[in-house]
Amino acid sequence: MINELHADSKARMDQAIEHVRQELATLRTGRANPRMVDQVRVDYYGSYQPLKTLASVSAPEPRLLVIEPYDKTQLDNIGKAIAQANLGFTVNNDGNVLRLPVPELTEERRKELVKVAHHTIEEGRVAVRNIRREANNELKSHAKEHEVSEDNLHRAMDNFQELTDEHIKILDELLATKENEILND
Picture (cartoon, helix red, strand yellow):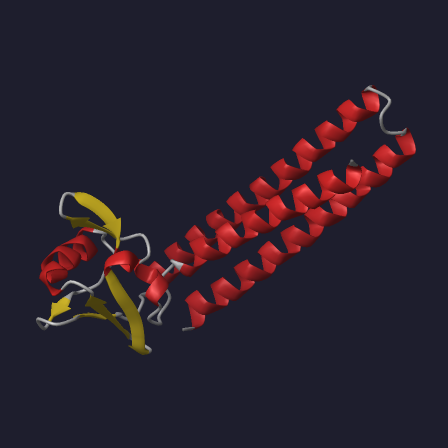
């Protein structure tokens, strides 16, 4: 029972970290990254669809994103959606593809992005700690029912703390990497 709880908690913590990774990938650095437009939703015949389902997004150069729609009639809709997403891009439409030059970040914008990265990491830390708390509460309830001995309870809680510390360390490393990316690219 304890092993199953540990495995479940580890899987949930891993999912939390993966979510944080995805969130950090959408933060704009000085380089073009196709994930920068992941949150863009396009009005496609009355329903809003993610951009990546309507077009291929590539970064052929360090400061350029190229969006090639599968349906060329949607070029204008995609351009409008990118402009409305307020990502700070100027959309250049040549009739076949959209080109998004990635402008150099100002120092002020870099500091704002670092704050956003810190906030995202803190949300990840809270999620990991909540998973630990839920597991510990479940362990304590099993101990009250005398399904788990006191020694096993303390040993398991220590294991959950170690698991939490490992995941917090991963989040700290992600933050350091992203900060370096934002401030130095």
